[in-house]
Image 1 (cartoon, rainbow, N blue to C red):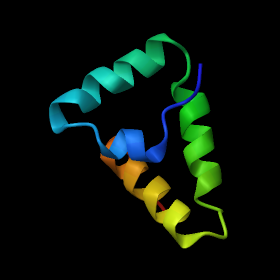
Image 2 (tube, rainbow, N blue to C red; image 1 turned 180 degrees about the vertical axis):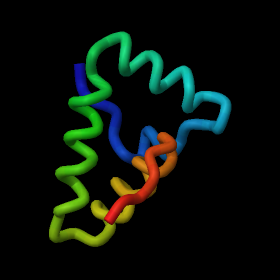
Image 3 (cartoon, rainbow, N blue to C red; image 1 turned 90 degrees about the vertical axis):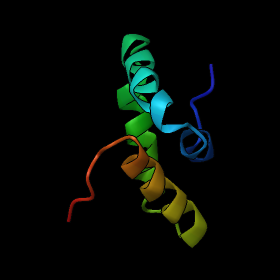
Image 4 (cartoon, one colour; image 1 turned 45 degrees about the horizontal axis):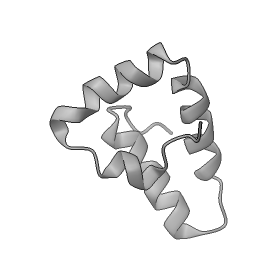
Length: 65
């Protein structure tokens, strides 16, 4: 099963975010997904970094320094 992409996450409605997180947690893929998004933050491609950052924020995780 493929992980959702940053674009998939950004396309979630506000009402879908909580159930998406619950679904990922119950299928034990939330930590894998977050690891993947965090790795994308290190990409040389600015668009990839921006999408990953926005997806992480969309899921409700605050930006950290």
